[in-house]
Amino acid sequence: MPVRNADIADLFDRMAALLEIQGANPFRVRAYRNAARTLNGLPRSVADMLAEEEDLTRLSGIGKDLAGKIAEVVDTGHLAALEEVMREVPAGLVDLTRLPGLGPKRVRALHEELGIREVTGLQRAARKHRIRELAGFGAKTEQRILESLSRHSPEERRHKLADVEEVARFYVDFLQAIPGVKDVVVAGSYRRRKETVGDLDILVTCKTGSPVMKGFVEYDEVDEVVSRGTTRGTVLLRSGLQVDLRVVAQVSYGAALYYFTGSKAHNVAVRAIAVKKKLKINEYGVFKGDQRVAGKTENEIFKAVGLRYIEPELRENRGEIEAAKKNRLPHLVRISDIRGDLHAHSDATDGHDSLREMAGAAKKLGYSYLAITDHSKRVTIAHGMDEKRLRRQLDAIDRLNAKLDGIRVLKGVEVDILADGTLDLSDSVLRHLDLTIGAIHSGFSLGRDKQSERIIRAMDNPHFNILAHPTGRLINERRGYDVDMERVMEAALERGCYLELNAQPERLDLRDIHCRMAKDMSLMVAISTDAHSTSHLEYMRFGVNQGRRGWLEPEDVLNTRPWRDLKRRLARR
Image (cartoon, rainbow, N blue to C red; front, side, top):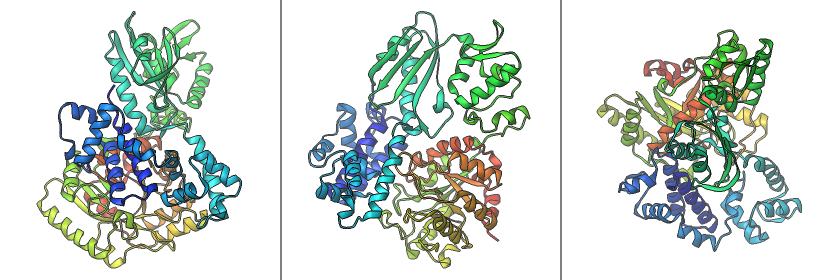
C-alpha cells in the first residue's frame, strides 16, 4: 500500500509545528509548511512519481533535502528527523497550536511553566485557573481556552473531505481490481460532498464467488476488522477512519446507492411520499406489495415516487423535495462553468510560484483570467506587500499580459481589514487594481456586532470588491470569528460587493447554508481557491462542491462570467 500524500503532508505539518514550538529558524518552519501545502494539492501520488523516477525537486517548494525526506517516508513509513524532534518536544503540543489564540510561543510557555504536554493537561490547568497566573495570558485568555476546548473535541471525530478523498480513491481502486467486481462507489456524506466525513460507505456489485470481502478486510491500511459477513463488513483504518462495505445485487444497486447516500432526513421525507402512494422504499428497491417496481438505478427510485432526479449534494431535506415536485430544482454550478480564479498568490508573498507559472497553470485549466491577490503589508509572516512593492507587481503584470495569449492576469490584492474597518493600503494604489479582496487575519475575538461593523466599514471603501473567507474558520481547527452573516450580506448587496466561497479544503468558507442565504438574497458569490501554488488551483472542485450544496447555479457565481461582464460587475458605482 503506497504512502498517501496526505500522510507525508501531516508529518511535515507536525514537524513545522514542533520546530516552531522549539523556536527554530522560521525559514525552516516555513519550508516544511510550504511542502505540506504542495503535497496536499498534488493530483498525483508522490509514491507513484518516485516509482517512475520523477524528480520531486521540480515540485513547488520542494528542494533536495525535502525531496529526500519524502522518499524516506515513502520507503520506510517514518521520518527520522521528526522522531528526533519528538524526543525533545512532546508531540501532544502540536494539538494545542491548533486551538484559537494559542500560537507556538504561548504553547511553549504553557509547557515550560506548567508542564502541559497535551490537550487534557491544558484543560485541567485551565479549570484550576493556573493559566491566568502566567505572564501574557490572564483570565480572559483562560476562559477562551476553555471555550475553544469545548468546541474543539466533537469535531475531531469527523475527517475533512479532502483528507478522505485520497483514502477513498486508493480503496476504490484496490477493490475494483479484485476478480469479479463490477461497480464500486462511495456513498454517504462523502457522495453528498459534505465538508467533513464521519465514515466511508462503499457499495459493491460483483459476480457470485468474488473474493471482494476477503480483499476488503485484508487491505493494507486496515488496523482492525470490526465485523465481516458475506455481504457486509466494517473495518477501522490506521488513520482512525471507519469504512463500511455493502455487497449488493445488481437489481438493487440504484436503491442501495440512494439509501446509503442519504441523508437520513431526506430519505425519511421521500419514504413518506412513497407511503402515500402505497409503496415501500428500502435498500433493496421500491415495492408495491411484494412486487419490486424499481431499484436498478437511482432515476428509477425518484420516478417511482413522482419526483425529478435530485443531485446527491442537495439531499439534506432543505427544500429539495418540494422543488423536485414543482420542477424547480436548481441547475447546479459545475466545474466547467468556471471561467477563472479570483484569489491566488504568487512568490511575491507567501505563494510558491511565479506570476508566469500561475498564469500558465490557469490557462491549462481552461480559464480565461486569473487574479493575483498577494497579501498586503499587515501580514508580515507572509512577507506582505507595501504600496511600493505592489506598484512594481502591477507593472510586472502589465508586462506579462502583453506577452500572454489566451489568459489575462488580473491585478489584485488581498488587503487586510484593520480593527477599525480601514484597509491596509491607501486608495491611491487600490484604484489601479482590477479587484480588491478584503480579509481578516487578526482580531478574531471581537464581539459579533463589532466584527460585523468592522467588515461593513471596510465595504464602504469604494475599491472593496470581495470579502475573503468570510468567517475565518478552519475546519476542525478554528471555529472562526463571530459575525452576523445576514447583516454583512445585506451590506454587500447594497454596496455592490461580493462574498467569497474559499475553496481551500481546510476552509470551505462560506458554509453551504450561507451560500443558500446569498442565493436567496441575489448576492453573487465568487468561488476561488486562495491558491498558494499552481497545484492549488485544482482545489476549485471543492469550492464547486460546496456551492452545489448551497444550491448555487452558474448565474449565482461571479467567476462564471466572461471578463467583460466581470469587469463591469467589479466596477462599483
